[in-house]
Amino acid sequence: MQNGAGNGARHLGDAILGIETSCDETAAAVVAGGQQVLSSVVSSQVDLHARYGGVVPEVAGRAHVERLVPVMSQALVESALEDSDIAAVAATAGPGLVGALLVGVSAAKALALAWDVPFVAVNHLEAHLHAAFLDEPSLELPVVVILVSGGHTMLVMMEDRLRYRVLGATLDDAAGEAFDKVARYMGLGYPGGPVIDRLSGQGDRDAIAFPRAMLHDGWNFSFSGLKTSVINHLRRHPDAPIEDVAASFQEAVADVLLAKARRAAAAHNARGLCLAGGVAANSRLREMTLDACTADGLAAYLPSRAMCTDNAAMVAAAGWWRLQADGPSPLTVGADPSLGLPED
Image (tube, rainbow, N blue to C red; front, side, top):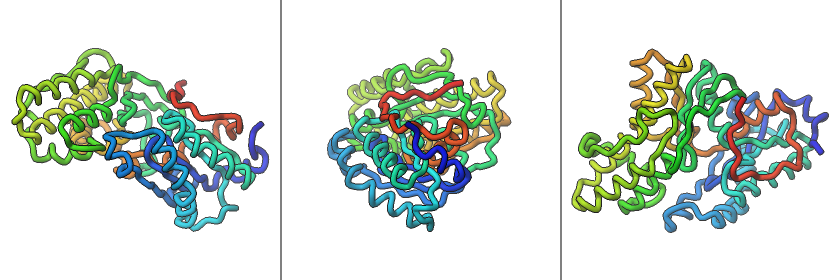
């Protein structure tokens, strides 16, 4: 059964409530027309998980249950809209933590039924690909997107709003996962990315020649060996300046990401490079992307840091476009923790 296909269709150009609960951020947002952000509310669970050194799925799921209703209510209030103004409800259906995903999907279906509007199941990776458009509505396609987060590292050719090709992906650790694991070994706490980024600003990024795995080998990535190299270096040199280690590690990650993205842009006649995902907030990666695009004559699209991390505005935006193309999602659609990016 599909929900609200008839009644909801008359509102397709209006506002969509987006819900994001794929991991450890409880978020809701209202976006109009797929690009105008009317509100975006994010409740972070970082403090809950920091003591464990990483995200605990059951803790995340319970926190979503407690926080989602207040977060959605705040998003609606800040949008200055009434419930009756909402044209559809979109929620991340995957990939992510299955228990966390179910919280958002269940809430979205309940609201869609109560308001008699369409429900839209959104792919979390596809949502990240739409994040840059919320800051840059005039973004010109095609672009090569470096999608980097704690769970994913992908090189994506984005040819149109809903047409993509995955050129490469990590074969082991995601870039964000490597940041967290290195930071944990260094005793820097969780999440590791922001701490390493901050320390790197005080260090020498050329101090240690960490490996650049698969630098000239296809489009795929591998960061497990780099992580191990950092750990081995610290074991051999326990007194090494932590700022130099952080800066050299960060440089190795950014080098590989940008080298492959630049080659991909040239090979596929892309107009620009775009960053997406939580690691896209990294200051050195952003700086190197700008420098690379200037050198190569490409446009650089860097989402604001608020749009890099998990948020519901990108979910609502992607949901609007999917609703135009495919119509409402059946209410039988469930959470899929291993959902892949749809490719044409």
